[in-house]
Image (tube, rainbow, N blue to C red; front, top):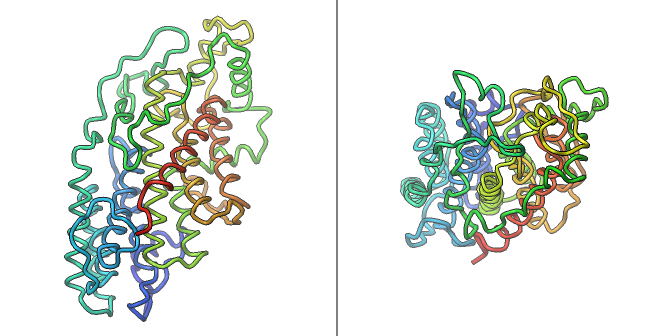
Amino acid sequence: MGILLCIVISACRKEAQVLPLAENPVTYSADMVLTWNLAGTLAVRNSGSVPPIFPMMESRMYAMINVAMHDALNTIEARYARYALTIPVNGDANANAAVAQAAHDVIVALIPNQKQAADSLLALSIDTITGVNKDLGIEIGKAAAQAMLNKRANDGASTAQIPYVPGTLPGQYRNTPPFDMPPNQGFVAVPAWGKVMPFGLTSGSQFRADPPYALTSKEYANDYNEIGKLGCMNSKVRTADQTEIALFWLDNVPLSWNRITREMVIQHKLDAWNAARLFSLVQIAQADANIASFDTKFEFNLWRPITAIRLGDTDGNPDTKGDPSWNVLAPPTPPVPDYTSNHSADAGAAAEVLRNYFKTDDISFSTISVRLPGVTRNFSSFTEAANETAASRVYVGYHFRHATVVGLAQGRKVGQYIFDHSLPEM
């Protein structure tokens, strides 16, 4: 049988191996799950959204797509608890058809301008299936998608872009370039994202971090002076490897760790049920890590390094020296407060789920980056990759070290909670 989805392969041949569907439909390999997981990331990338789809929205979309596939599969054979779908289990349905339809319907609902690509992929997916009871699988897929869309319809995501008034006192967040000038003046991304209904946490504040360092503290001065030298555009102390790390991890972090999870599914030859559950746990953890981080961000409203350094002579700390011309390695700084780093929280959450799932941290893998094509980075553990993800935000100049360290720890707490409480074995 030929490779499924020429569209996905041609657009993403460097992203991941997309395998042919299993000839024996009873085995239900992870190939259809992998194909539609990849299609979800492509739909986000090709959406052309203005403003862009930020990591917070992206993580929510990935969670909805992958959990819908999970629910569809577990309505055919109930191995793991379902998230949204409650119809009776029906073991006669074709699992591949259910997976394809569920993912398709969620993608089209979330990103309508990708309907043509999703419709083409669905037709090809269904046409390629050789098993029986495709129609019944399609109906279950539709039901799984609709249940997911219904459950998340009023979760607060669509109303998270609320007005925000920046502070004026030292330490308070204010707009960073170019969001301090027309035509984007005053834009701050989704200030109410911390109030979005989590997928698995009890609330966005469940793992709220302690307050950031006081501006007059020695710890703050240490972070300030570190990023002032290490994170600036023309740093004289940042190494070539640190620069590569900074640019490599500029991808939206849900995409980066979705890619790593896909590598784990292929490497460990997971079947459809386990692949869909692993994708779901990772994406739920990342979605909730974003919510948790934004709860903390807008609780403390700490200014970004670019603001802090340009106004460093006004912060009341004798160990900080201002530099009005200071800039980050790769402008612009994301338009949200510094503390905690949701990039770091996402990585910590994903790594914690993967570590728990495989019962070890010590798994070697490599991964790539859309933002730094042609570069592959290699890791010997999930923790190593998560730590590098977090450190990249210091090297690029976006976050104080404390925001990344605490964000990473916050994400690990979220990841552990999600693994312990979400989609358990039946």
